[in-house]
Length: 421
Length: 180
Image (cartoon, rainbow over all chains, first blue to last red; front, side, top):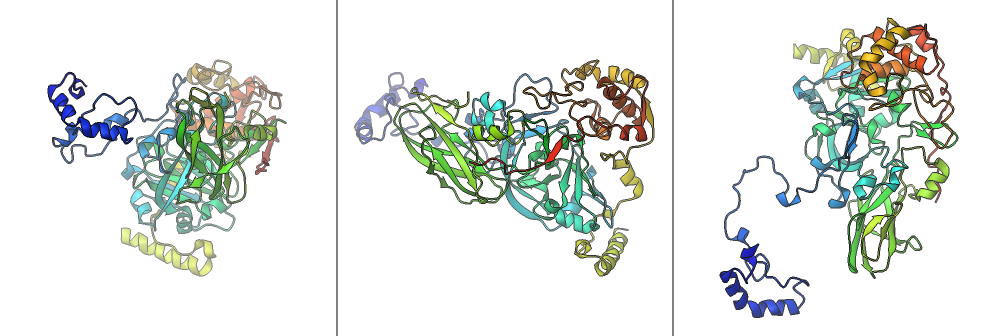
């Protein structure tokens, strides 16, 4: 740092003096930010060190990593859990731009840890109500006609109804959603290869992980937009996302997109597995529980400014993400006055079916305390509900499928905090 | 050999194409047929009615012993929970402000208990228990919930015959249910 300081470094001081007139003109013209009285060699009129010597060799990282200055942008892993075999970690949504989640930051939810699967030894068994039960290798599966699509995946409990008061950041609150371009084969194509019998109504998918995760998928979804995917954002699936093969059910709760897929059992009835009876069912105030609640309803969150950030009065671009399991996002409305009025945010193209959609709204903060929030409207006309409207129907104990509006409270200091806390 | 398999599949596809509906046409000849032995070795799905439960049986007493060595360190000796979930109690709480969801209070089908224990428990060594031990642990957990007597022995028939208290507690998805 001292090299940048003209008081301590004679050559920097000479440059500073020689170029002082130009620098002063730049500051007066608005080119310098307040508080930048100290000359930084990397800022004009200086020339940065990294310009004056060659950088690292080509291929010095054979699998590229983010800049070392971004080492704080990591998965949000809860601390102090009783065990980490069945647990989750969240995407740092507030640190990301665009709609695609980097593979290394994709959210995780595993029920029996992350298996280390050798792709050449992995097999997919397709059996049950099919004409020809099949054993497929990964090479076999890559021979099928392929398809790439961009879709979000979201954990069913994102967040739980009680947890909505505890989260501090956007990631804490809804970081169990991520979005990627997936490549694979249509599930319908694989089922057609085995030959579905007319009485087929469900397909029970099972993972090769230690949980042998089991979920039942209605045949209509299997024959519609369901995929068996082996790639994610152009490269092979990460182990955390089901390497070497997973189900991808666009718009359905993430748990159903069974990872590490090893078996598809075509049946007349659901399996009624633990994960679709004891779990992933929504307990209502009357004591009944809703079952087979597959679709993730429309939702949005402002990622900037968001919880734990601090803003100054003046211009800010409000930006965030919206998505719906029922299709495309039609619009996102943003309130900057604690919900009194709502205005339309701009949607960044492309707006894709069952994908994250980026929204933006220019805003000048006057320095007065307020609350900002977003609400999504999808192509079916469904409007993202407030937490009050949601819980007036479902109570506080249904845990799953909480898609309530997330308000951010902005204090006079500029500190942004969870509006529910 | 691979060529013969592909030829055989192509022949099968032709037959299906003639005789079958739209669902069974357009085969590409990818993969190989699975044998019944292969399917039997991998297919561990148990349906809710227990029709696919395997042979074998286990008593509450056996289950208590297996549970103590394999399960109690996480779930507690009496299924009261710990690092693992609570398994016992909570009947009558589902409509309260503090519902307690356990095997006894919430799970609708007893055969699902067998399915889950066999496929995924214990967490550190899944699929390590034999079928009779799985019957026994199921019997013990059901006994702790007051659903079978202390001297019970469960097999495919008797496990499937147990009527769980919350069997009729599930409803279908009515969403969209929240209007703005």
